[in-house]
Image (cartoon, rainbow, N blue to C red; front, side):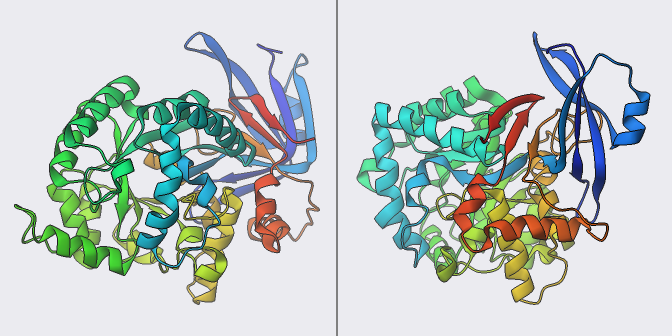
Length: 439
């Protein structure tokens, strides 16, 4: 099969930006092999209507026929905790209580190396099956759990071990020097695939944030943490930092991270729901991105933490990059289809215009690749990019269908039972290779 061109026949859904997404009915996508680092991978070398593409081609290609299906680029999930898979459906009433009662005990189990290996094996296989091949992921404090994640993950991810040097349960606490040593080792080993991950300003002291931040920047690693997810978290943080030398005059949660040297073009802040104009200006100035997690922030009756509605319009007005994330386990469902559904539904319920499926699709694919500086090689299916794509269920495509109505049809498939989203994807291709297929 290697070195032969592959032609995929399908209806193609190809997000370009918030308002533009190509829909090519009876399309064809040409995949061509290229050598990269000693191995053969496939890139998109042409695509368009089937009759036009096939006319241009000589014989000697392999044909894959999905013509009654839709193909689209693989997902990027820009904020999730692989070590929280078991608490996705636990009762959620308050962020800080939920962490204490469910999340921390679940993460403690990862100190057991055998347990961690088994879980990594299961979780990352499941992640591929939902169509996610890129994103930003949080691990536990344990070095081996991070190694297990890197060994099992498939696709383009940045991953980091959380840092917990204060206000943490004794069974998950690190000393400053343990945190520093771990970051020094892992950021040197994984470079731009590593993400320095202070859990949040409550659990990581500013000195550790400052020193590890320097290491991350030296090794060109990413940085990720949580910001302004709930009002009581913000109050708690600000009260706490008033008593920390050098931070007494800090006016906002974002300013704490600025003083700790964590903002920048390779930084991703999870949530960012309650941000004042000064904070938005600071994020914009430093080119810091936000990962928005609608299913996690959703009302408690929708299995979210009830944190509130993210104001995407305000964020965009300031020119801040943002993309979608599942926030497993704050979010209950791994599939980005559920995340897109929640984004559209919550905004339409609040009568906020502009939260379309077209936008959701871009924010669940290419926008994530852009934040990770990977958009030249993946994120959508334009010519020259890697052939990372999903084959979706057969769907009746009418002449009247638009991107919006088509996405709606797909999303409807899981609305009554959201866990069905996790098995919606039929096949997953990574760099042109079939890596998941549902019988």
